[in-house]
Image (tube, rainbow, N blue to C red; front, top):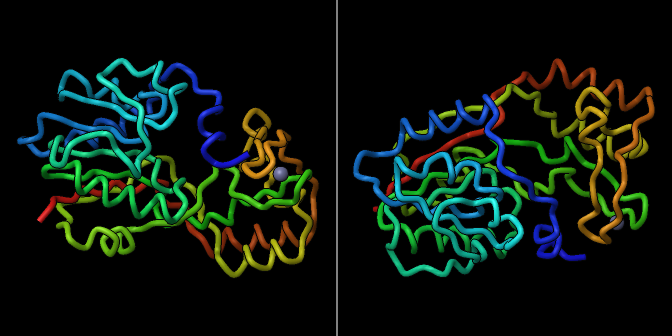
Length: 257
Ligand SMILES: [Zn+2]
């Protein structure tokens, strides 16, 4: 199963607004410049943010998955982030929330080009802030593919996104979301080299209800196992000292030059 089919078949559900999401949306609205009337939400998923922003702005939402779009109540069309079916400069602001960290390299760089092309003025992005994607590494028991359990493929922070959008000006940025502990790169290297995969993700990181996952390589569905391993436990304990908790997401607003 390739990545494309994975997101198409994902079990999309009706958008639900949690308190955390409401607070994030309020912060986002507070930094949207006054001259923004139209917004394109790229990779809108279930449309929870598009639906919330619509009315205050004229929002259009797009996603590569037809399945997800049925929950979107705004204007919408299907397209992939790296080939957006819209004319140059068609929206005042191009927005994308928690999507770009999922894109493989070739799609990611084309998508960033598309954001610049389709936006007439602003680009607003949110993504996990400087995440060590190895923290949530799982191994498929069927094909042994190792992957981030949320399918994150890249780690971004303010410096990296500024380099990628070097032809745009950073206007403002803020961090938001639950405070999450990162994972020290050296400790994750040791842990994944010397301890078994079933000891990698303790239950208190991901409670039972959220331990089901599907291998992006072979499509095998499984429950992420956990059994105690002294060395993995030692790495996790040392990591508490090495990695303080920080707000999970970074939101950045850029203006085209
Ligand atoms: Zn697999």
